[in-house]
Image (cartoon, rainbow, N blue to C red):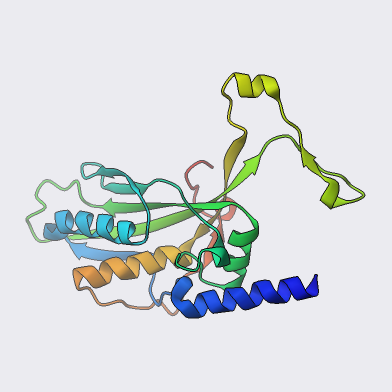
Length: 210
C-alpha cells in the first residue's frame, strides 16, 4: 500500500512538472472597458476551447458563457491543466470528477456599450463528482462492496449515475481569468490579501446544481 501511494504521488509530481497543474497569480475576476465586450466574449470562447472544454452556451444578451462538463483523470491525464496541487491530481485520479466553467459579464446590459464604461468579468468553475446509485458497502471489508443493479430502472431508461457538485475550484478559475486577461492585453495583478483558493460549494455562493 505504501509503495502504491509513493508511486501515485511520484507520478503526480511528474505530471505537475510536465505542466499538468494549473497555476495562477491573479483572481477570478477582472474588468474591461465596455467597448471591448464583443472581443471579450470571443476571447472567453477561445480560452475555454484551448483548455479542452466544449462551449455549451454563449448568450451575449445575458452576458454569460458556459461549458459542458469536462472529465479528467488527474495524474492519469497529464495533459490536462485543471489540477493546481498534488492533492488535486490524486483526487481526480481516484474519483470520477468533472468541471463546468461559467464566465459572467456584469454591466453588459447598459444602453450604450460604445460609451466609456467598465464591465466586470468573473470566472466560476464548479467540480462535480459522478456517483453511481445502488452502492452496497461491505462493513467488514470495503473491497467486497458492490453495486446493485436495478433492471427495471434500466428498462425505463433511467440513468445509473448522477452528478453532485462538491466544490468550487477558484484556483483553476483564476488560471482561466489570467489567460483571458493576457489575450486581452490586460496586466495580471495578484491579490495578495485574498489569494485564490478552493472553496466548498456549500460554504460559498450557490453553484449550479446545488
